[in-house]
View 1 (cartoon, rainbow, N blue to C red):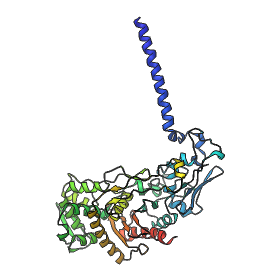
View 2: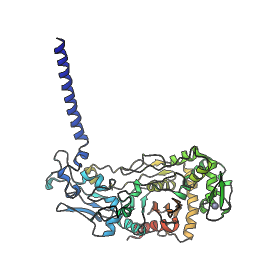
View 3: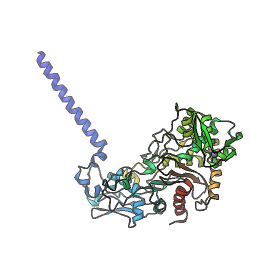
View 4: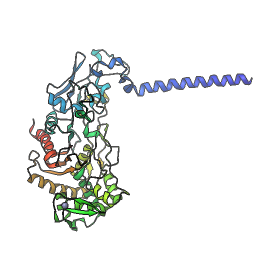
Length: 461
Ligand SMILES: [Zn+2]
């Protein structure tokens, strides 16, 4: 009797395990069919990287960026356009995981759960995609990078549409390179869209964050004055400026980008409040997105590091790391009175997007700062922009607000150049960030990239 019961229990156990397994497998097939169909072993999807029958990709002006013909994937006729938009559009290798062709390959290919990938052409849904980017702006920024590694992003801070997203180094998607040990250094980081997937030492663009912390934590900051003799000793280690700035107000110290003043400000605010403000502005936070592409997490933390490192962190050095898209979002927060617009890159124009089941909906806008803090930052960024305008920077003649950065990244390397800010114009409300590594000064190396992009957006071509 006992033996029969044991056998019966074992049989029941096996039956349940089998049924459970079936439910699990069935569920997985339904919920994750998009992932399954994209596996490299799926022979149906493998012609032209699975893109042999994929839909067209257009820019915002209906310029064709990619299309399929005779089971082959083709790109723009113009090589600069192909290279400038590589990281947005992608290529047949699918190595750039954040690119539209990699991310939405299944939808672009017209794959259907019931009919599968071998769907007849006559039944294949229209799977064309329109992007928010302007190819001419991407091309102009790409050319202005002048062979340097880095990126440029410009987006509309009212709507969230990304207009320019270009990343370097790049290559021609019509002829992806064989990367070998010899040419590897030319292609360092080539599969990353630096706009979303990279973070860089911010240098003085981080003074926007330090200034926000000062406005919120030092009530009499605008009545204080800061002495700069060109060098400030903090715990036996000097923090230096290019030249002595003399006696300055808070606004003047920001416009002068005075390291000595901002080192003192960071120490006075303290590590905990510095971190709290940085986190309000999106640092140490992995929840930010461009469409549904996650932004790499920007880093700020000087707690327990001592005054010297705290001082360096306040001027964007130490362990600070900033993602370019996040910096553009912070500028959008200043432009919008405290709320950062979330960016998106797949256009919500037309009904194709619903059919394709692509997550284009931009994330919720993010309230970062009190409106008073944003208004004060706006004044500060106007002061610095006036000094750049005086030195010849022009964003297609638009009213603009900005901050440069020249981040030290090691003794044998040229600094990383930054230019971030926004334009104040009804028709052209743009927030931007450009990074040029080993570029030198922000004002000479990074501002021309933004000038080129915005020039193309405003004037066409
Ligand atoms: Zn100074």
